[in-house]
Image (cartoon, rainbow, N blue to C red; front, side, top):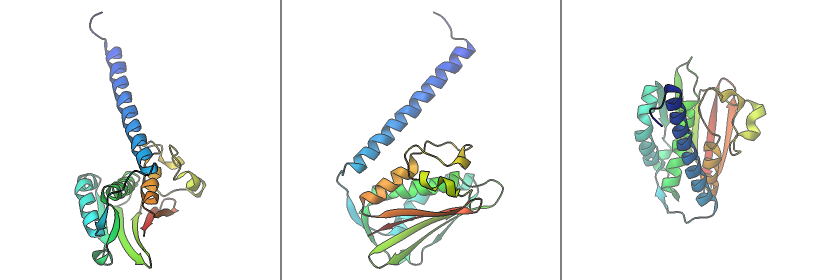
Length: 193
């Protein structure tokens, strides 16, 4: 046997990286299975302001690196309280913001707005970006597992994030939807009772 040549080293590194990707995918699928199987939620009262702050602590370095301006229009959110599983809701909000950052266009100043509103019987959280948007022909794919829009081939992803977020929101009795204009941006919104 002996030393590996450069091509063999390259193949070995690719196999290790591919195994890491498969391991992450299995973890994601197990998480999704736990959510959809009706595992017990850890429901507590949550102030959206606190939730936004905690998620932003994690995402701020990425936002700064990508020169993204994240604006919080939280006048209403300051007085809002919702009952939800905080860890799952943090994950959903994190994924929405991470997607908004990932799919921004490099040729314009990047901006993401987070805002909340209260309607009878529900609180609604919105995440709006000025990114690439989603073409109408891809609307049906958005919440399908392992499906991605056509205009995102240059961005790494596995088509898992939005179905995962949808499961989190629906598991807590909420709903999720979006509005999008290609090359203008997308607003993802979710409501919780």
